[in-house]
Image (cartoon, rainbow, N blue to C red; front, side, top):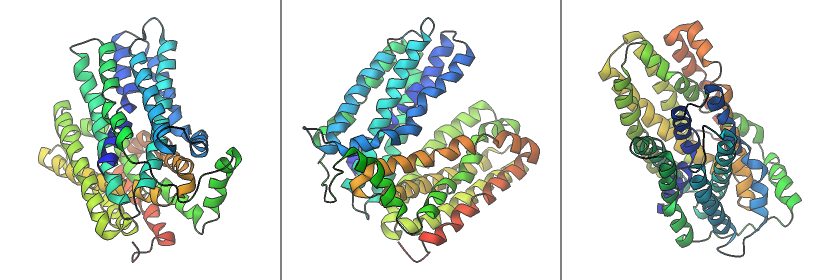
Length: 393
């Protein structure tokens, strides 16, 4: 469980170094907003990581083993690419910044592939729930350190030094890689690249209900995702100050999410993953309806606090169950490839479903928009009937 937590931290740390922190640095250097916006494309490796995941399934490094060997290589490359990004010049050479940032996201996505595979292979099905919740919490702490800590440090030192410090913050993850046990490979490993690329797909789609599960992965958190995409404009529109938003939504909300993920992991030990998807999915949907009530009430700090506490707790629980479920359905022979495919699919709603949310909120009004986000969660819940009946764990 400690390994899951520390590896989650190592995976969460690099993410916002190429988004929030890099955007702040480029803005400070006077880089054109169009260029800053285009820099989002360096994040493509996170959605395309399934393309090279079979390579990591097929080959075993001669030191530290199949998973830890690749993990150490990815972490060492990530250390140097993060430090190298800090040595670039956003104002005079934005293309070099883009290249360095792309290297960071590529090696970060590679680390994600191996860590996800390691967690699935190292933990039993009964342990996956709690292990996944601790991974998610470690991930969020890493993101907070990189974004919040990085921006605070940037007020007192150069960005090049900030990136160097962040590179050294990968040390806990690297130490964990050295001392963690290598997972057993009872299911064997792919013998050829062809087997590593095609067998995971053939094996998955030969299962009963395979398409229903893919539809579920797309839809389970779609209402939650759509609502989250427009919350900041919503808070400002009904009269909350930026200080209130920062204090209640970001700081208080962060710890509520951490508590929710941990509580979800502990409850999954008792309920099992599939039953937890029912309970936590229902709580997610109900919590989204809280924003519709807030839209009717208007500016109320106590009610905002209550809505944020409930929403972030239930979202943290739902995410923990969601991640644990995806890990549990992968075949241990092709863990890296199958999980990379599923987690890439998980990110689709974040991009496509969030795109029209501004238009929907403008057309339907805030109350109608959040009611709609609540109702759109229903299809994802109903899909559970196909492969996770209420009385199964």
